[in-house]
Length: 107
Image (cartoon, rainbow, N blue to C red; front, side, top):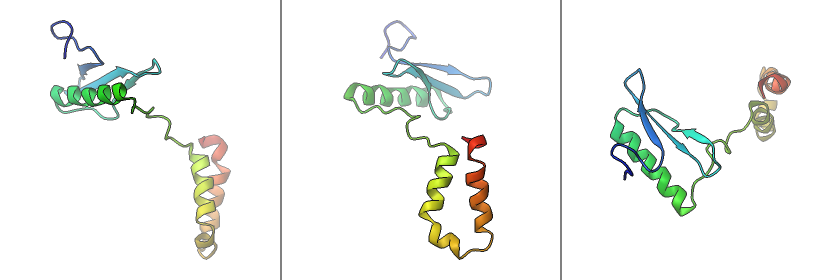
Protein backbone atom coordinates (compact mmCIF):
# COMPACT_ATOMS: atom_id res chain seq x y z
CA UNK A 1 0.00 0.00 0.00
CA UNK A 2 2.89 2.40 0.60
CA UNK A 3 6.25 2.86 -1.09
CA UNK A 4 7.96 4.57 1.85
CA UNK A 5 6.79 4.59 5.40
CA UNK A 6 3.74 6.86 5.50
CA UNK A 7 3.63 7.46 1.70
CA UNK A 8 0.93 6.10 -0.57
CA UNK A 9 1.72 5.03 -4.12
CA UNK A 10 -1.56 6.50 -5.41
CA UNK A 11 -3.00 9.81 -4.25
CA UNK A 12 -2.62 11.46 -0.89
CA UNK A 13 -4.66 12.22 2.19
CA UNK A 14 -4.43 15.29 4.39
CA UNK A 15 -6.16 16.47 7.52
CA UNK A 16 -8.07 19.74 7.19
CA UNK A 17 -8.45 22.39 9.89
CA UNK A 18 -12.01 21.19 10.39
CA UNK A 19 -10.62 17.82 11.53
CA UNK A 20 -11.96 16.04 8.45
CA UNK A 21 -9.81 14.32 5.85
CA UNK A 22 -9.40 15.21 2.17
CA UNK A 23 -8.35 12.69 -0.46
CA UNK A 24 -6.63 13.81 -3.69
CA UNK A 25 -5.21 11.93 -6.64
CA UNK A 26 -3.81 12.53 -10.10
CA UNK A 27 -6.26 11.23 -12.70
CA UNK A 28 -5.28 9.45 -15.91
CA UNK A 29 -5.71 12.82 -17.64
CA UNK A 30 -2.88 14.23 -15.50
CA UNK A 31 -5.07 16.62 -13.48
CA UNK A 32 -5.20 16.63 -9.69
CA UNK A 33 -8.66 15.64 -8.47
CA UNK A 34 -10.20 15.92 -5.02
CA UNK A 35 -12.76 13.51 -3.62
CA UNK A 36 -16.29 14.89 -3.95
CA UNK A 37 -16.64 14.91 -0.16
CA UNK A 38 -14.37 14.99 2.86
CA UNK A 39 -14.12 12.03 5.20
CA UNK A 40 -14.53 11.61 8.93
CA UNK A 41 -11.48 9.39 9.26
CA UNK A 42 -8.16 8.92 7.54
CA UNK A 43 -9.00 5.29 6.91
CA UNK A 44 -12.22 6.22 5.05
CA UNK A 45 -10.27 8.63 2.81
CA UNK A 46 -7.62 5.99 2.09
CA UNK A 47 -10.27 3.38 1.28
CA UNK A 48 -11.91 5.80 -1.16
CA UNK A 49 -8.53 6.31 -2.86
CA UNK A 50 -8.09 2.54 -3.09
CA UNK A 51 -11.41 2.25 -4.93
CA UNK A 52 -10.46 5.07 -7.34
CA UNK A 53 -7.07 3.43 -7.97
CA UNK A 54 -8.78 0.11 -8.66
CA UNK A 55 -11.21 1.75 -11.12
CA UNK A 56 -8.25 3.42 -12.86
CA UNK A 57 -6.29 0.17 -13.18
CA UNK A 58 -9.34 -1.64 -14.60
CA UNK A 59 -9.92 1.18 -17.09
CA UNK A 60 -13.28 2.06 -15.52
CA UNK A 61 -12.32 5.53 -14.25
CA UNK A 62 -14.49 8.33 -15.57
CA UNK A 63 -13.89 12.06 -15.35
CA UNK A 64 -16.14 13.38 -12.55
CA UNK A 65 -16.65 16.66 -14.46
CA UNK A 66 -17.96 15.06 -17.65
CA UNK A 67 -21.50 14.63 -16.33
CA UNK A 68 -21.94 18.29 -15.43
CA UNK A 69 -24.36 20.28 -17.57
CA UNK A 70 -24.49 24.11 -17.60
CA UNK A 71 -27.64 25.48 -15.97
CA UNK A 72 -28.87 27.21 -19.12
CA UNK A 73 -28.58 24.00 -21.14
CA UNK A 74 -30.31 22.01 -18.39
CA UNK A 75 -33.14 24.57 -18.16
CA UNK A 76 -33.70 24.54 -21.91
CA UNK A 77 -33.81 20.73 -21.99
CA UNK A 78 -36.14 20.62 -18.96
CA UNK A 79 -38.57 23.05 -20.59
CA UNK A 80 -38.61 21.04 -23.82
CA UNK A 81 -39.29 17.82 -21.90
CA UNK A 82 -42.06 19.42 -19.80
CA UNK A 83 -43.60 21.68 -22.43
CA UNK A 84 -47.07 20.09 -22.32
CA UNK A 85 -47.29 20.18 -18.51
CA UNK A 86 -46.05 23.78 -18.45
CA UNK A 87 -48.73 24.86 -20.93
CA UNK A 88 -51.45 24.25 -18.31
CA UNK A 89 -49.78 25.99 -15.37
CA UNK A 90 -50.19 29.70 -14.72
CA UNK A 91 -46.82 31.26 -14.02
CA UNK A 92 -44.95 28.48 -15.82
CA UNK A 93 -44.10 30.87 -18.64
CA UNK A 94 -42.34 33.12 -16.14
CA UNK A 95 -40.21 30.20 -14.96
CA UNK A 96 -39.32 29.35 -18.54
CA UNK A 97 -38.36 32.92 -19.32
CA UNK A 98 -36.21 33.11 -16.19
CA UNK A 99 -34.39 29.88 -16.97
CA UNK A 100 -33.83 30.47 -20.67
CA UNK A 101 -33.42 34.24 -20.42
CA UNK A 102 -30.84 33.91 -17.67
CA UNK A 103 -28.86 31.25 -19.51
CA UNK A 104 -26.00 33.48 -20.77
CA UNK A 105 -25.25 34.77 -17.28
CA UNK A 106 -25.61 31.39 -15.55
CA UNK A 107 -23.75 29.20 -18.02
